[in-house]
Amino acid sequence: MTGPTSVLLPGHDVPLGRYTVVRRLLPQRPRRMVGAWCFVDHFGPDDVSAGPGMQVPPHPHTGLQTVSWLAEGEILHRDSVGSLQTITPGQLNVMTSGHGISHSEESPAPHPPVMHGLQLWVALPDDARHGPARFDHYPTMPVFTDGGATVTVVVGSLAGLDSPAVAFSPLLGAEIVLDPGASVRLPLDPAFEYGAVSMAGAADILGDDLKPGSLLYLDRGRSSLVVRSEGGARLFLLGGEPFDEPLVMWWNFVGRTHEEIAEARADWERSRREVGGRFGTVRGYAGDPLPAPELPTVRLKARDRFGTLL
Picture 1 (cartoon, helix red, strand yellow):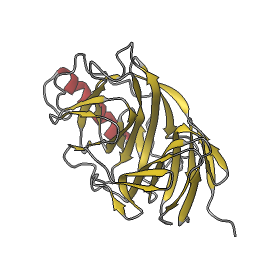
Picture 2 (cartoon, helix red, strand yellow):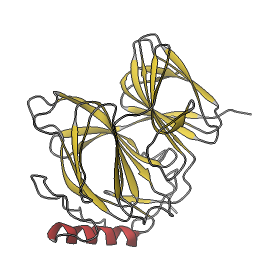
Picture 3 (cartoon, one colour):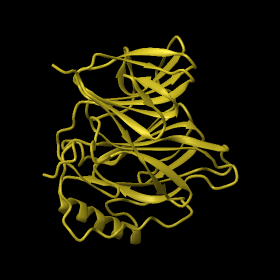
Picture 4 (cartoon, one colour):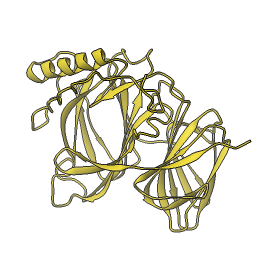
């Protein structure tokens, strides 16, 4: 009998706005999700001392949560429920779209010289995705140390520590910072699948050399995981119970059918031209909202967590 499997999945570069290029690690063709985590972008470290940094105009979301985590830098968040919040390293922003929200992200002026972090999405289950929009900021997160390892529990629970972050399905998100030569054994939930991302440095996980630009997927059935690094590393561990609801993901929308996505697109185009509406208005951003791209000429179809068309 074979044990739980693991697979190293390389990401790819994607432009974000006019000034930022990110490494997209989820979704991928071989693996679309890790638990309810359905989208992972790693950006930086980028020298933004001579430029505007991140500039993402107002845009909409449905059916998901955005989870923003920084290693370096500063980002100013605005949204259509009236939030105006700066995030710095060690703090957490969670935006729950529910039926619909819009927001912008920008490097404030002035801003730190380096920008580095993760932008992640969590798919909302059917019983939560039509609820009201909300935004939550957490100024401090629970942290534990183990030798040369510092672990921050960003979402969910790990090693007896509970994150205050709002979640609608069983999830884990944790940052792991390893000093050179350090290792740590982390307790895992055998019912969870996991994914590990390196933000900086290289780490040895189950014999795989994990470096920035790839995601290591770990199947269910593990009760612990040893992570080590010879030169030091900053990692992010994702986990969750497999998300069995089929999804249609297109642009900034997560839905269940082509019709839902088409309706959200039409509602956003109306919101761009009119005050209010389903996606509200982001006030204070010095620029126009992003127009929605044209829908493809073929129907959008739901896929399961493995990427299989349904």
